[in-house]
Length: 142
Image (cartoon, rainbow, N blue to C red):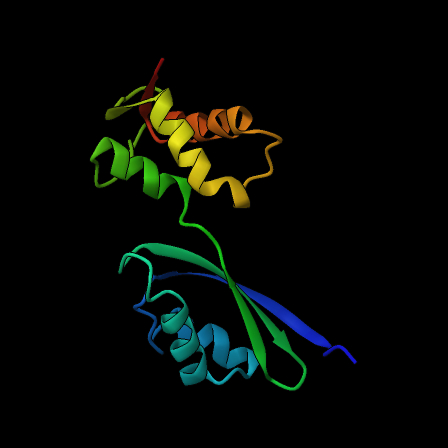
């Protein structure tokens, strides 16, 4: 028989660097999840990734206080900042352009994120990434 789901928690944690301090501790503590067990499992699952990469995670909490977790690919904004060699996007996107990426770079990022995007094909996914770039104040070049 399947376990009954109590709820889900969505967090963004640096890969391999989860610890019981906020935001992880309070979010999991309210749900009654064993925080140290989660930290151990998450850090083990993300140990092969580059350390410190922001990693979205969806935690499913069951009524018996057990949990399962699913890690997603890093946000598109992380990859775009890395491609444009920036620390952060524009404060005024649309007015202030802080950098540029090529459509080829957008396509490369779309390949990495394809499992988490709701696009039908790679070209549509690349257009989604290009839209994210524009909303960050990046110029998308041919």
